[in-house]
Image (cartoon, rainbow, N blue to C red; front, side):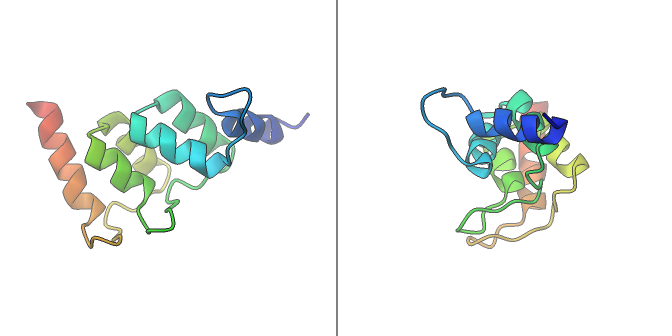
Length: 105
């Protein structure tokens, strides 16, 4: 089995063996909960670091808003846009700075 296909299967499997979620759903859930291992699996499987949901909220926004600095750094290294806008018109860069300040305190 090709490595990329196996990584996609592992990403899509997520945390449940009974229910299969889309790789992007698993990715955003992992970002929101700070699960850096699952985020890494999904990125290796081909989920774009700049992926946004239907509300145009990006993975970087979710990580920054939740204060997951390590996940945010991984997303930025993988090509996420720190200045992207989403429905509430808040830049991920602003949230990034807020998350970074929170990590320092």
